[in-house]
Length: 206
Image (tube, rainbow, N blue to C red; front, side, top):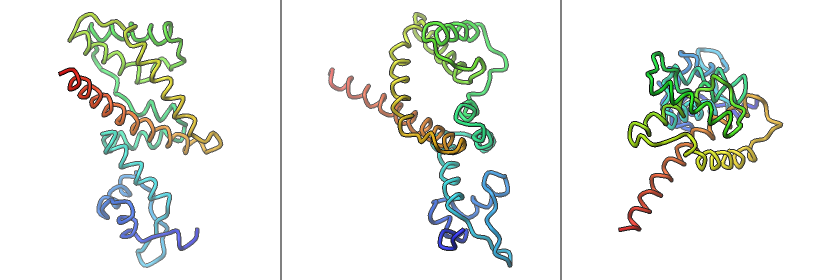
């Protein structure tokens, strides 16, 4: 490792925007590896540490994940993009009510039969979709899963565009990192754009 590519913890804090105390906490919690020892209780950190801090910031800030969830995602990234996405959640509901049970069956049928997508049976996103259906139905009572077809088409196209920028020659962990960052950042951007589009349309109508 080139000495010019390593920094003391104070410089790592400056470059990352993460306080020294927080960096030390991440190291203690196992979210960030220890720096390379230079003796006398000193250590230096590398670009890998800087990138890891950026990823942790995205997971906890943009993604709103707890430190426990962040650790699970970081570990899952070794298995690739799909495992990392599953680690993002949401958590499984321990006691689903009748509305969620019905919505889950409808969501599964929509995913597997209507869309024909190859999605793991235990993919957390299935539960997220079912919960969205429950919320919509409790509001309007008329929403069927098929009403989500335009969103599915848009999502499929958007993911196709995102995947074009991912280097398939990169390591499994790097592809997982790009996929996780893309998911959280683009999900947040899409939600923000949808809200602004709603405001724009409503304002234009008045």
